[in-house]
Length: 582
Image (cartoon, rainbow, N blue to C red; front, side):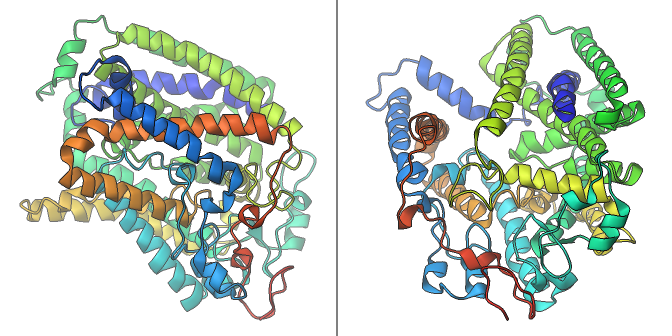
């Protein structure tokens, strides 16, 4: 409850303050085009503009919406296995290695595919929105991570005793491959019980989970240096109010509206900060976060919001700040998981909210909505949505049996909470146990800290290559924060989510864009909006008509992915229930 108060009292409104201060850097410039907003722009135009064409955008949207709505009933209820079709697992039903290679949900996903739009757009949003150069960067990063580094580390080198554990898992393990008993090392104050921890031993991660943190370290470092080298000059000029760049038509047209006074944003930040400080003081035993921790978190959020917003505005991909906030607080206050979570909420989630608000401001920029009207609508919507979201979350936790406990839920259950599982395990790694016992001298994964250095140097090398070979346009399209952060949504996302996303994105944003450009310009974003809307409406209908009534189907097509052995270890002598012994 303390964390919920912490989140509700600050995250969204504080992020709104950051967004207001950074509008001139990432909203007004024409090349900060925010691809995701174009979907909404296209949808609004399709719904409101009258056209005489035989196939208007409104008619196209309606047809695509009906098709998406009707089809989602199949993978969403009638045939859930279509969400992950792993034919390798069907052929090699008794081979652990084959299922590790072929499983789209718990392995490398070789040959796996999906016919479920919600699986394609679940984590990285619609692939029809991201520009192809960003898709190419994501594919290169994903392929490097999933098909080169991970197999070599797991099968070739057996790094960190990797074969004792599943190749792909967000769970925490003991040295002998058993699930780590988290509750056994937590005392009544929600702090680490050192004797119990020493008795159970060090925490081990799956090979994929460990390497994902290494790539996350590199992503954070590369974000700063990439923005510094490629956008530093422009940022400096805008800070000095001496930027002489040509304003685009949208910026010039928006000048007719009265701008939002700066004190509106300062007031929001001030009031939110004061309320948060009071909560941290009054609820210090529950929140565990001291007042200086709150101030430090706000400073980190503001420092990183601009570079990450620039990456998002130009690529539609958002590098995560969560790892660095968890790391820093874990070093400062180890053994206090609630403090770490609250620091993450203030430092990381306010940044993500700021970027969301900046995208909304860009939408208003494109649609010529008066800034003050946009401000008021966003503020009211934030308060209402935040309250409703918190209430719904508490209702779900109290009404759905075994929610978020994937071992106790039926196959293909929608209530496994993969993101929350990663969030919980991260609070254990960074907050309860602390980075010194995981990535420091007292842990197993200290060598992964070298990824920080590699990530920092990478963009400098790309920039030097660009300066040395200015005629090679493809060099400047190498975006290391996107490439290295390609797997930032994993392990909540799976290999199948990525392969399907890249495939669909390449079809539309490379082939259709190149060979049917007029169709792409007219219908691409409308199609994206229709597919998302159809899935959303059918998902709500399925929940209220079927899930709440506890009506389910039982046949081969509802029995999961049929890749049960993909979660098994492959080391000799490791015994796990349901897995063959080697």
